[in-house]
Amino acid sequence: MVEWTDFERATIQDIFAKLDYEDVGPATLARCLVVYPWTQRYFGNFGNLYNASAIIQNPMVAVHGKTIVHGLDRAVKNIDNIKDTYAELSVLHSEKLHVDPDNFKLLADCLTIVVAAFQKFLAVVVSSLGRQYH
Amino acid sequence: MSLNESDKAVVRATWSKISKAADVIGADALGRMLCIYPQTKTYFTHWPDVKPGSAHVKEHGRKVMTGVAMGVAKIDDLSAGLLELSERHAFQLRVDPANFKLLSHCILVVMAIMYPKDFTPEVHVAMDKFLISLSLAISEKYR
Image (cartoon, rainbow over all chains, first blue to last red; front, side):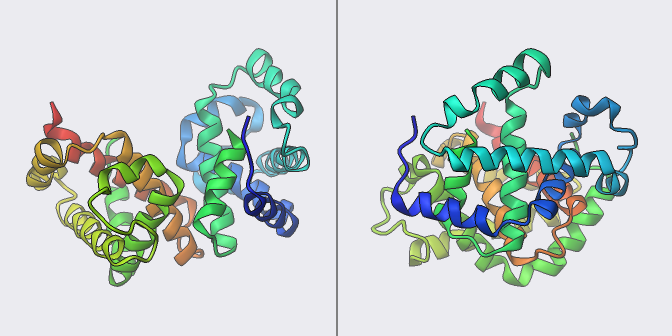
């Protein structure tokens, strides 16, 4: 399992404390669906995803974006035991949703970029976010 | 996933906005890459200092962005336009092409930080495709 330095731990907690979930969640998922359009395959019932503005304005994307970021919140609160915390979610994503795990990296990259646009980042902070998602 | 005319237009427009800060972008992106992906440091053991902000990192970041600028200029035929650079990376530098993805990601992150309002999802996807195409062109001569 991952060993967190005090600095990484504090930085991750600081970022999530200051995060506006209502904004970042929807922006992250929308960006992922625009930049990596093949990820849309998992959202067949989300309605209109035909172009970037449709995706960005889609209310189901917004709701699901918030769900995802709140899920990340659970990892932050159990940062020393993410594997067990996510056991059920992992089964859900593999057995029921059949999501190719490569997509988690794509979403993580989008989250990194959305948060970067909201605040200045130290290089290590980006590293911390990435490590946590994996 | 090749660049269509709309992608190229977005890349050209974006580059014209950011090109004067190219040196800064390059230095920051390279510094981040060396920090976030420590395995990339193995290519720079001849530098005394690989920390972000060091003179070597700054100079090399500038060099990398000169390559990106060349890519923008030759965007209609990247393989031909970047032939020499490809040969240098293939036969001299021998950088594992997997690392191009890492640097590309860092460049995008720096763009998001420096140009938060301009780095819309549409600009993001065009720049991501461009950097991937650039990386492919650089890998052309490897085998």
